[in-house]
Structure formats: structure tokens, C-alpha cells
Picture 1 (cartoon, rainbow, N blue to C red):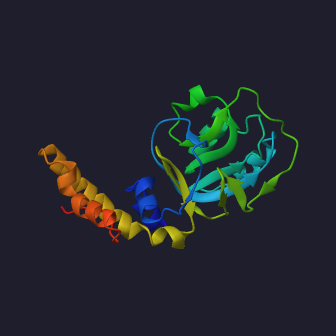
Picture 2 (picture 1 turned 30 degrees about the horizontal axis):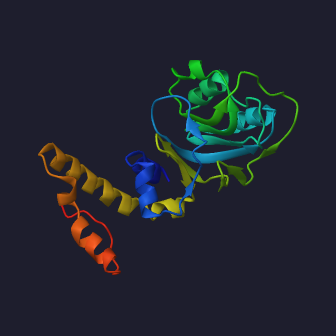
Length: 217
């Protein structure tokens, strides 16, 4: 597991998506709230609406490396804020993702813990109602199960089982190696189209033949 997490940290979410365009990716409404490192870890899930007592429960139970993934059920009140992010950082969690509202976004800019949410709102939810914990939830338009691997960067959030993501890593690593070669070629003045089989690929597609675009570095 730790090897996979380390491998993901060296990649980009877009590279995994290039390996499998059907990868479980959260919709573009789930956005990074603060700058900093990538989010990588195991999902610890909760589902609640306009009340963050359940979020406190999963935060209290979370272990190092866990990512809190919260289904806000379409609520309009904040389910996490600065104190939760600080506690998650203290506990060495991987991050927080809320399909819903968070607050204290200004203060979160200086906390070295990645936080993603749908939006910010100054009014916090109540602290009375018990929701669901460690169940399969919907977050960002995709399903997330307890223990799923969650990986997020500036492009967005993807998730999957250890097995699902492991099979994508070798191809993503090859893609990263080719992109590094391409960046080096750019610095030497090489044109993008000269790094790709573009003309051959385009001609074959015009002719209705099977083809894939690829590097020829």
C-alpha cells in the first residue's frame, strides 16, 4: 500500500486518467481550497447534511494517512473549517474532501494539509445529528468506498481500489518519462509535432484506419 501511495505522489491525476478514461473522477465542482502538496491516502467516509457531528466522529477515529471524504448531501452549511484542518494535520492525515461547504478558507491557506470542497460558506452546520460513517458514499458525482485510494492535485480528484489504481501506474510512469523527454526537447527548440506520430496518426484517421497518437522520442 505505501509503495503505491509513494508512486502516486510522483505522478499526476491526468496521467492516470490517460491510462483509463473511465477512472472514477470527481466532478469539477470539487475544488482545491488551499495551496500545497498533493492529496494521497485511504478514504475514511462520512455522510451528513448541515450538521458536522459525524465529521467530528470520523476525524476523531482517523489514522495517519487517512483522507476524510464527506458527502454533504446537498446541504448549504459548512461541515469543516480551520480547526478541523489543523487537527487533521496534527494527526498526519492525507487531507479532507467535502462534497459541500467548508469555511475559514483564508486561514486554511497556511495549513499544510490539502482541503477540497464544493464551495465556501461562513455559516457552520449544527452539532447534533448522527449521520453515516464508513459506508459507500457519493462524492463529487462518483462513488467512494471506505479504504479506497484517493489521489488529488491541481487538476482534480480521482479514486479507486488499490487494485484498480495499481494497474494504471506502470503506464502512467512511462507517460511521465516520455513527457520529461518532451520537456527536454522543447528546451532544445524541437517542435511538438516532431515529437509525436501526429501526421501518420492524422492520415490514418482520415482514411478510417485504427491508430493512436504517441510519442516518437
